[in-house]
Image (cartoon, rainbow, N blue to C red; front, side, top):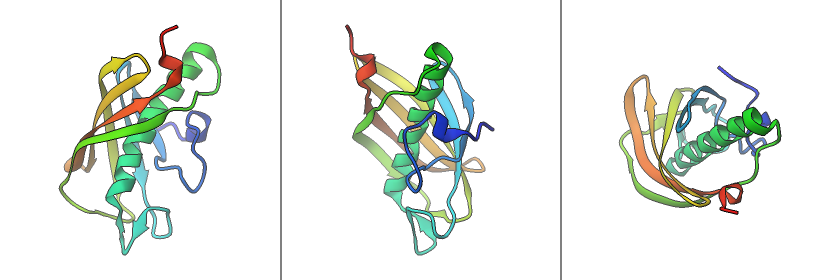
Amino acid sequence: MYKEITRIIPHRYPMVMIDGYKRIDDDSALSEKTFRANDYGCDNGTVLDSILIECLAQTVAAHHGYKALQEKNEKPSMGMLVSVDAFHFFHPVPENTRISIFIEKTDQIGPFKIMKGKIDINGKLVATGQIKIYNPENEPG
């Protein structure tokens, strides 16, 4: 697993919500995260649902950052999460549990990417949803 995650995403401690990525393809990526008791986003022994959405967004950032390094050998550009759609949370995520975060691009319109995602624990589905990301580097030009 690639662990130098801060080289390819702009986030810094305590706001880094992925430990590293396992796979990055053209339009998809798989990352992992284990939240510890004192990590940002843990409350009363579980990970907050809003933090799981951020895990998806940071997996998108890792995807973009990895591609930027491969293509230009530069630091990744900034992007932002602009919408969250059709999110469903099926099970709470206990702290000290490794989650897998999968994202896949389903559409792109100029600087906006539509990404669907899912989070699971050992194959057990925890959450699914769709996010929209704005990245000004993708604006036509």
